[in-house]
Image (cartoon, rainbow, N blue to C red):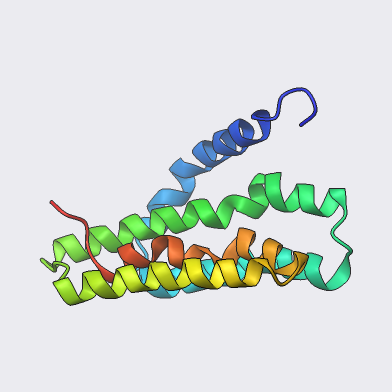
Amino acid sequence: MTFNPPSWSISALFFFYLTFPWLAPRLRRVLHPRRAMLWVNLIYLIPPLIVVFTTHYGVPETGILHRNPLIRLPEFAAGILLYTFYAQQRDAGRSMSPSRQLLALLGVAASIAAALFLLGRGHAWYYLLHDGLLLPGAVDAGLRGRAVG
């Protein structure tokens, strides 16, 4: 991070792309992507919960939470599961009704409002929001609707 700050992001993305040929086909076969998304989100919350309950948010812990590709892998898997959900909805001929669009928009807005509220409540919430708590809001619109086309 001292000499080349973008390098952590590039190396994490490279790691994700290396795992994609193995991970994507397995996640694509998931029959219940919403349930799988819940499990992925719960797994994603384990590392920040460990940091919150066992440390004082030192440089090593926060660095691992922010830059370790293994810690961030659930976020990548969530994107693959979201595609799986889109594809299943498309294949079933389901479309997103106006009421579901509004519900999805309200879910995203509620997620943002909750995040803004919690960010002022201390360091622990920052780490929990960064690594897991915002994931449902990030994919809410997709999980309630379907891909167009």
